[in-house]
Image (cartoon, rainbow, N blue to C red; front, side):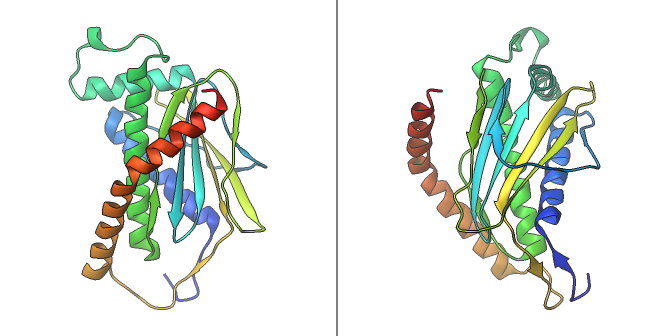
Length: 221
């Protein structure tokens, strides 16, 4: 990478897409792909059948939303647990099962964890996130990120499972650019800083859980 290389919001989105495909492909044992085209959108929404949102803050502020069709959710859920050795008879039969939401929420947590690691390595900055909220919904819910930026950006990317079922990732974040000033390697100080950030984020999760639950209750979900 040259010193003049600029990392844009869309480059950060590409990094997130890589985390999604790597984590879900590894977890399910099957190929997960995404479109070469990205769509500009005006707002992010949770949509039926299963939606999830994650807020992140730190080096930059943003919001990640994933929207699964019932078919995509059940395929990923089933493939993941079969890959873990769970018998077919013990799998949930409906996307409305709490077990499906819990498994997809855990996978989303792994995705965001991988993403924050990549951000730390590639951009030398740290971000933290709340606990992902995954739930079955039957109506569209608009979610926005609170930012002081006057140029927020929102994007949608289409993903496809091996069984050709569709799900979507939406990201909204402040417009940002990173410039590389010098060559660098990941060093111990950065790793220690990231570890401290993760510990602080973990300690704050209980407080965030209460806040998020209140938020969901206000939405009537």
